[in-house]
Image (cartoon, rainbow, N blue to C red):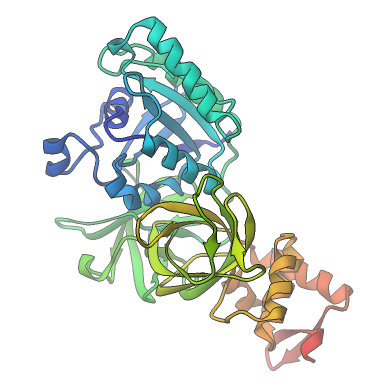
Length: 440
């Protein structure tokens, strides 16, 4: 079980997500004046609480209204577990369905179904709503998820929910500390006397006070002045923690949600990514190559077009290799998940896994490389970066493109590839370069 975990909410507008979080944590996640006036969440909200075991859990409250779905997408990628919130007096609604689609596309597998407002309906109605929900979840990642009936206003079922969160958390593995640190930014603000603060969930690595870092896209060098985790000042943060970072070297006006705070050289901003796309099965029509889309990955959103690489059109429920060409650069890594929405109307159509982050357009050789990369063996990844470069690279350059692997893992992969005679080694001055055999 992870030492700390990030829980997210999902569900239709006004089904009680923010009220539930306030009842669990004592913190109101709605911080904007407009949110309090309208009674709905617009931006991401955050809170934290202790589980019965004493372990700490952070909660991300996402907006339920369809107009604010882009904000919801910015919060989902950091979740270890989801509370799918469904109101007893309404049952499954449109945003319940879309949020569940997004959870599946982004690989969120652990969750609990929370039926809220249980005090507003009769027991027979509650039983019927639960049956409807279980039928709706059949065949999804939450098909076997535990169900908890609660009334946040009366406190009914909250202790049971805490116990079920603790039990479900047992299956969640700690996030890897390997590789460079990176923190997709979901909040930016200024604190008087401190300056610029960026916040998000640390996806990988280990971040320490005094570290040099860079914000990508943008290549903006910054220094870590201070770190807070769940409101407590700390010297360091590790992967999986909700983290606020006080930085020197950047003003709030220079930054935007979707950028990433990372170790220098760990990320490369790109406008072209390749990946495996799965189209949602309930769509009304097939996806054609060149369709204008909105691509969401991490906390970023970028408009572009999606091009099919291995077929003329993609039918609902089918999967295929795609190239996504974006108007604004993003800074993802191999293996990150993404979601696609139509440019207009803004509906979710599918998502998948990023297989390549580079600026090369499609050719037949690239299709073969993508097919091999899906196998995911570390030495295959190292080889395909070398093959894609078509030139000699030092081990350090490989680490910049594969920061999910440690330098030691990359060296071990290179040794395997040398033994397999797939690459050659070239000592030049004080550096050792590597080249795939096809380009000798």
